[in-house]
Length: 283
Image 1: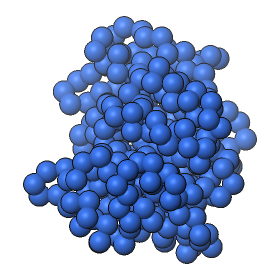
Image 2: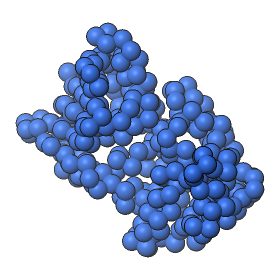
Image 3: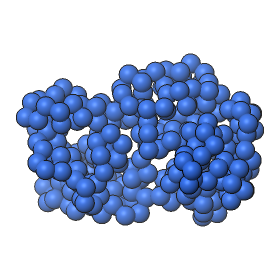
Image 4: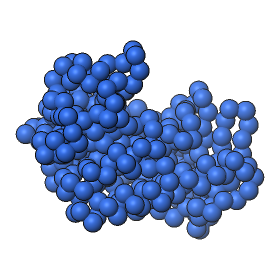
């Protein structure tokens, strides 16, 4: 059995509360013997209302490790969580990235490109397989469109809810799947609670990022002589879990460093563009 360990600041949050079941369901679905068995949390509880580490472990039938080192020694693969706040990720992932065991780092990988590069470099130094992604990257409808489309995508646009600091990663992952690497510059336009960013590539290719509080996740794409295709963003968690479990098996990252660094660059430039709307920002 592949023993998976969670590392987080505290355990009572959406991803740690749902991923053990998702992993178990995917393991049964894809015939991979794996489950979350151990956890290490820096804090006992997020607040006075949250589950304590002990209560969480009892509920999810996991072993609570007293130290980070104990978790590393006890498991075959590590998931660095803290999905809603990437600021602590570099510090939270450091020991895992030195472990030599496969590491998945939850979205968003790092707050800056510089931090992301340091994390990748550390993993490379210790021969640690590592990858990061948003689950939406493995949306079935998105991958089906990509597989069936032989020509490069000329244009794609995305919509989604949330904020630029954290939730925007979902849209950037999907845009990168379709557009690939090569964004050159971006410009932002803001109105009310909605942010709209245009990205330019070589050869006249463009993509747009539009974020608003009540906007659904959606992707629109056109390529070659094909008209604009509306791509639903609905089924992704089980496909993501499949990729994750196979990574823990074969240690081959399904998302490359280059892909992640492109996403980090687009997100970082986009945040700067929002602060200075109407000004071109280099990616």
